[in-house]
Structures are given as C-alpha cells and as structure tokens.
Image (tube, rainbow, N blue to C red; front, side):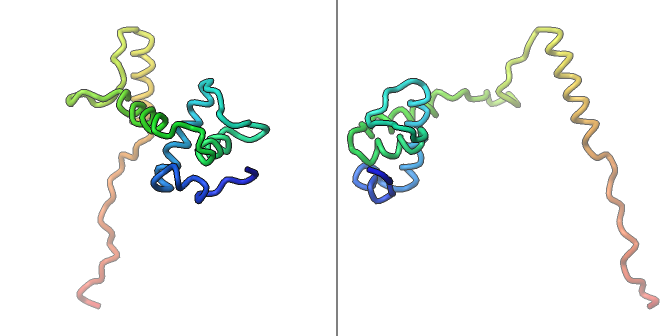
Length: 124
C-alpha cells in the first residue's frame, strides 16, 4: 500500500474526525514502544498509524478505548482551585513563582485609555 487515503480507512472508522483521533492515539502508542502491525519502512509514525488502520490488522476498538481512557485519566482541578499546579512548600520554588508573577504584572499595561477629543463640536 504505497499511499493511504481516507477512503481506505472508511470501512474501519466512522468519520475523518475519528480517523484523526485514532491515528493520533496510535502514534502515541507507537512512540511509547508498541509494535507496529505493518512494516514501518522509512515512514513517519503518522503514516504508519494510518496504514495500520487502513490495513484492517489493527484492533480499532482497542485504540478507540485507549483514546477515551487517556482523557479520563487527565488531572482535573478542584472547583475552588485556579490552576492544576500543586502548591509547593519549597522556598526556592515559591520565590521563583513570586518573581514570575511580578514580572507578568509588570508587563501588563497600566495606562487607561482616555476618551478622545475627536468628537465633533456643535459649533462647527
């Protein structure tokens, strides 16, 4: 299979959107050490993932399950938390955080925009 097209994958996926999601998950799997089910040759992992899906040798249901699970395992912030960051007790990290926050505040514009005098006068 020299060139893989969307139509080659249609029997195995429901839409092009799902194809993108499944291919991206498969690329993460391949980069993580999974064995390819087709000969990779000199192709990039994205091409290998698409060729695997189009070949029908790949368990698409399993890849779909892995994709869904990867988003379920993502960290979620508490309702009252502003970020996902963990508050550190290390004084050096707290100092760096304070410096970073101060530098960000310094970069923000503090001037207010005054109303322009470009409005036409009634005398004209």
